[in-house]
Length: 212
Image (tube, rainbow, N blue to C red; front, side, top):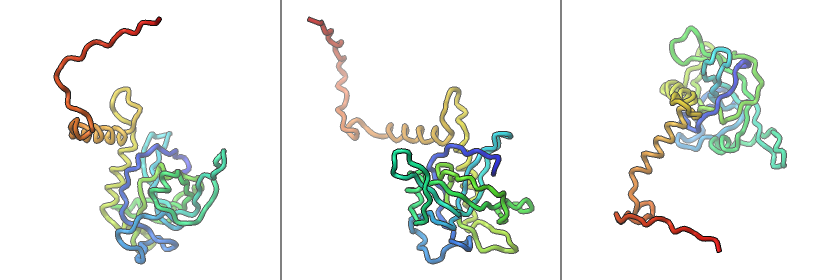
């Protein structure tokens, strides 16, 4: 993690499960459909890019500290401990410091051990793929509470990569969002957009303005 730099991510979130506080497991006191909250002890997936190998990957970290911008002119990072809605935290560009998990190399699936690299770098939630729920540990190994979330995180990571279109400065996710927005616009008629239908008559050329 220490050698990695963060990528700019779309706010396309894949996590529908939450992680618990100090136990790193699901909080059974939260309703299933409750809004996702960011708080100390939550587990979050962060997308990173290793500049040496140009390799993209995501890592799980348990939140130990949270920072947000102060209201002053310079807007320095100040710590806070109050829970906040996850999407609001993304919008506010909250940063988190985590203790990191490590993917279990012996496992074929999405299994982790709680002994990742010692990296105290504050990571912006702009680089987060979602909150992650972990099941109770078995022999000091943690599985995803929602087994389908692993492939969703893999897919979300792909959207952070640069677009393959020549000359484009967007990411694949930004290109996908633009394509979707364009398709939506094309489904609306002129009346839907509050515009009058074209009459079919040719418009006269614009009048020339003569300075007096």
